Image (tube, rainbow, N blue to C red; front, top):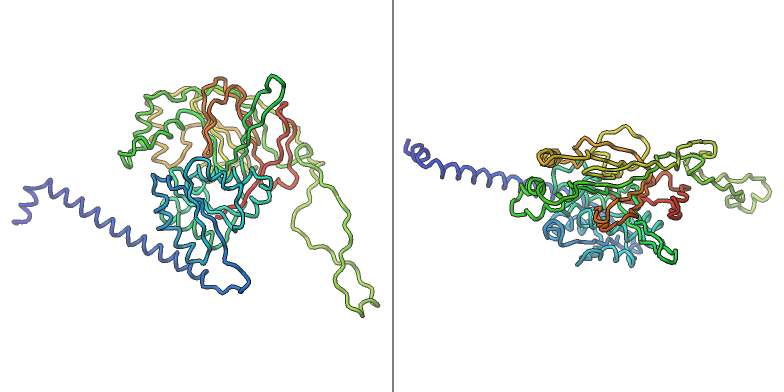
Length: 457
C-alpha cells in the first residue's frame, strides 16, 4: 500500500516515468527489430559476394551520387548505416561522389564513365538532376538504357523511391535496405520520362536561343499547396508536427492562390498512322549456319533468323483523327500538377490503360479553413492528391502562364519567371519508343521522340 500511495500522491512524476519507460521499451524493441532486419539483408548480400567469379572478370562497379545535405543532413549517416554495408558485402567496387551544391549531380553525368550502375542517394531533387544530366548527353538515349539507376530514399521528398518500393513505404529502414539490395539482385525495369522545355520568344533578329531541357520521372507542380510544402523545413523545431504547421501558417502567407494560365494538350494515343513512323522493310541476306566439308555435297536451306517476340503492327492502317490534335483549356485554379504513371500508379485508382500524363486541376478558389483541412488530410493519408480534382489524360501539353511572376516546381529545377512563353512537357511511353516521333508544335520547332531509362526495382 505504501508504494501505491506514493504513486498516487506523486501522480505527475508517475505518469512521466511511465511514459519515459514506454518510450524506452519501444525504442529497444525497434532497435532489435531493425538490427535483425539488417542482418537478414546483409546475409543475402553476403551470399552474392561469396559466389565465385572468373579471374578475368572484374568486380562490379557502382557509383554512388550522395547528397549529404538531404534528409536534414542525415543522408550520409543513413547511407553508411543501412545501404553501404549491403553493397560492400556483395563484393561491389563502390565509388562515392558527394555533391556540394545544386546542379553538381547533373554535371557529373557528363563525365560518368567506367561504371556498371549509378546509385542515387538522396531525394527526388537529386534523382531529377541525375536523370537530366544523363539524358542531356549526346549518347543519352543509349546510356540511359544500358546504365541502370538505383534510387535510395534518403531525401525530404521520395516520391520516386516510394513508387518503386511501394510495399515497404511504412518502414523506412526496410525500404532503404530493399532499394540497396535491388542493385545486388540486378532486377531492373524500364520507366518512362517526362521532358520539359522552356519556350522562348524570338529576339529582334528572329532567332530563338533554345534552353536545355529538364527530364523527370515524377511530377510537375504549381500552386498554393506546393508553395506551402516547400516551407516545411522552416518549422523543423516542431518535429513530427512541422507538416501540419506549414499548412496552418502558410495559409496566412502570400502563396500562389491563382494559377492563371492557358494549357494546350494532346490526347494520348497507343499508336496510329499519324504518330508512328512506318517501319522500313529491308531485305536481309539469308543467314546460313556453319558447314562442314562433307556438307558441301548435301543441299541445305537457310537458317531462319531468331524471332524477337515483338508484334509487327501495321500502324498505317490504324486511324485516330484526334491524334496530335491540340486542345485548349483555360486554367484558373489554386493547384495544377502533372504526374507520370510511375508515381501515380499506387496513389490513384484508375482504369486508364494507355500510359500518359495525368493533369490535375484543383478548385478555382479555396477558403483558408478548407486549405488547412485539405493539407491535414494529405498528411494523414500520405497522398499528394486528396482534393477533388478535375483531371485530364494527355500525351503532351504546353503551359502558358498569363503573369510573369509564377513559379513551376519540379524535383530538379524551379522554373521561375516563365513569362508568357511557358513550358512544353512531353511524355512518351517506353513501349512506343522504337518508332515514335512528334511533329511540329505550333511553330515552336520539332520535338523528337521521348526517352525511357532503366532503374532498379
